[in-house]
Image (cartoon, rainbow, N blue to C red):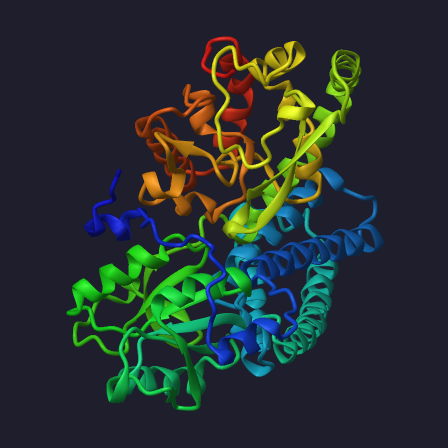
Length: 504
């Protein structure tokens, strides 16, 4: 079996653990799973939208005042001045740390930071006008009016933002669904700190701990113990979990590493609470969950704005591909019907994001009476189950084109680890049995094409080394993802189709 060095868990590797086996969980865990869940809003996305709208409002206000007061209009001068001022203002607002969810909930602190930054921006503008001797070009009425009306606009806008953020906080949509790994007195102290300073940011679901008895009671500071760490893997696959906070001292190195090698397969943020550590690092070493200092151990691979960018990329490419390739798809459907009786499409269950079962669409390439829904037997060269049309569309990957509909449904991405059939094997071993770390590839949505495919690792997997190479390439893709990386893989896919011959 291919194994992962547990010492490298912090660097991005995963354990074999994590197969979805529907194991029974504790009654308390089942209650949480059964409860309805509203979608969680992303703090960075909200802050980004607030900044964009704020900048647009200030720019429109500045230019509107210019159009009303300046005669004749001097767009060639005023438009660059307005845009530069708004850009400086955005930098100043961020420097004043006014674009944070915790600040959006306040009134005095938020308004004070924004007005102070706005006044500073206007001071910089005045200094710039004096330095460049542009006093004759700038209307004093325009400048004063923009400063006063801009201040009023900022106050009104930020109060509206506060109303929305407070409402979302009360609804729980800005609280990250969180579990704690650990128990006993250490977990009790952590829970008290969360309740004291981070209650607006964390929805604490429960505890998971491998210890039993007095060292780890069933109830800690009003928080239920939901199971062992291995149960957390199944729990997180049946209900949304955004954050795992580990309540263990840094000195417990083996326990921390064992825990990480179990949980790395999950698409969640993992943080090590610093409340127990006697070591004191520099301020930059910590990140914060509310007011709680934590050390970053693992991040969800694609989140916040990156998730939005990738989703838009997927939908745009899928729509364009369906339009451009529709003649090929229609011709393929006709050829399949002409050669053999049966449906045009073949539908198969596969594991998707976070091991969720999804239905994958493909053009049927096998004879109807020889279909293999679970792919218990891999297709080999000159396989008698494959039709003549099937051989061609499999070799050219045309059989995968219907998965563009899976992309539009949000089940697949254009680029990502390929979803494998549930019973697929390498050397008579199921994939997850053959390769330790296999389930870590499900931390992102699977894709129609991927890094492994353009590097020649597509088609038959008759050896453990072949599936190991696929998994290694998939993990590399997850750790190094970017839109440019996706675009490169997309461009290289048709090129690689004509240079590999191991797809049957």
